Amino acid sequence: MSTEAGLKNTVLVAVGVIENAAGDIFICRRGESQHQAFKWEFPGGKVEAGESVPQALARELAEETGIRVASCQPFMRIEHDYGDKQVILDIRKVTAFDGEAHGREGQPSRWVPIPELHRYDFPAANAPIVAKLQAQAED
Ligand SMILES: Nc1nc2c([nH]c(=O)n2[C@@H]2O[C@H](COP(=O)(O)OP(=O)(O)OP(=O)(O)O)[C@@H](O)[C@H]2O)c(=O)[nH]1
Ligand SMILES: [Mg+2]
Image 1 (cartoon, rainbow, N blue to C red):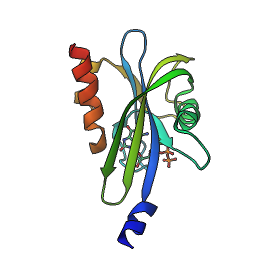
Image 2 (cartoon, rainbow, N blue to C red):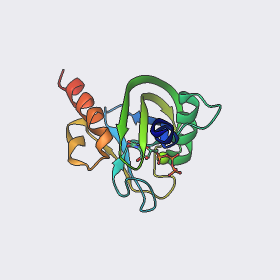
Image 3 (spheres, helix red, strand yellow):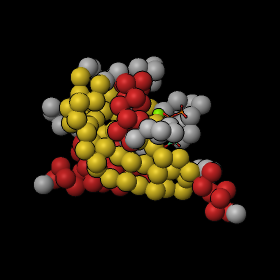
């Protein structure tokens, strides 16, 4: 029963780590009416019924950033419990895309060099994403 209640509050989220030719990463700031308000995020959103993760990612990135995904690869998967909500983040690295990434819904956005990512206030679930990107950048 508690499991059922938990599952009802679990959302699968397609998240895009968009990388440009300089190796910088595109991030956006969440709005005041959203869960984890005002935190910085990697753009993305909930996978809808009947969608695959790459399909949801393409749709969400078109809506939120205006880009068309040309190539993406699995990066990592994170399960996190916020108490009020459980999320499963399926994170994909977007290495080829068409268009200029921008905050298409009016949200603040910017390209950030990987060594500076930890300066931004991300949702708690995102810590392993930033850590993995920075560890890979050190190689
Ligand atoms: N897009 C995105 N969502 C994240 C990240 N980290 C993280 O915990 N989340 C959580 O994933 C959940 C779903 O993401 P979302 O709110 O972007 O979903 P959506 O675009 O479909 O949004 P909406 O319901 O606000 O219209 C939220 O609870 C959000 O807090 C992240 O880096 N990017
Ligand atoms: Mg979203």
